[in-house]
Image (cartoon, rainbow, N blue to C red; front, side, top):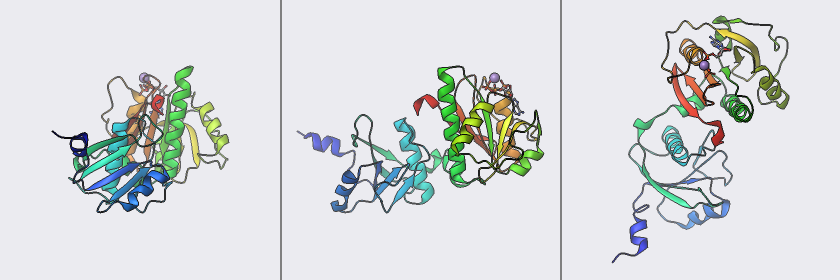
Length: 270
Ligand SMILES: Nc1ncnc2c1ncn2[C@@H]1O[C@H](COP(=O)(O)OP(=O)(O)OP(=O)(O)O)[C@@H](O)[C@H]1O
Ligand SMILES: [Mn+2]
């Protein structure tokens, strides 16, 4: 009869690598003595100073998402290959890694999230800051009144050419950037009003209250959503901007790039 080691051991026997999701330092160090295994650390920060590290743009509360995006990031970074079998170790319930999942990396499962952050015109930190802002706004909104918001990030000159003002631009003569605390307060205040925020590659708020008039044909958006998502998606086909949209109607945050929706997250999960 097999012991438990034999049965559960199948989860990690002859894998091509081990992915440790946000391990503690002491947990990571135990792998220093393990022979013949490639260890890849995945997380929002490389807290343990690992040689091989894959950065996640968000912590991803949903474990399947966390692993999926870790694999995609690993393929994108060239540290794992299509078809590799990986033991993915992560935390679910405990403060320490408590779960191992055996997964085969597949280049076909490409979602574009890495392109969104790493291969857009706007700086990755700027996109991340706007995404976090939209998530925060979604969370707060869900407790009180729901709010919608539309952020167009990068390629601002072209975006301005394909839009027109709905009202005075409160950011006209200012030099404020996303990520500044005061700006986040201002943006939340203005997001109750119509139109889109236009943000430069470097994170400068160029304008609020822009009505987008993309020339691109309609894009595929989830059923039940309307003009805000359509315009937010289409402008990313017309320009090299990415858009981040918080839906007032279903409370989800979505990101578009190249006319495609590449990310959909529930703010309540963060
Ligand atoms: N072309 C556009 N450019 C900028 N803002 C727009 C545009 N079209 C719509 N909006 C903004 O989106 C708001 C909501 O419109 P609509 O309900 O059609 O969008 P939606 O995609 O269904 O989004 P939601 O899920 O938030 O309702 C409008 O009140 C307006 O402020
Ligand atoms: Mn709507």
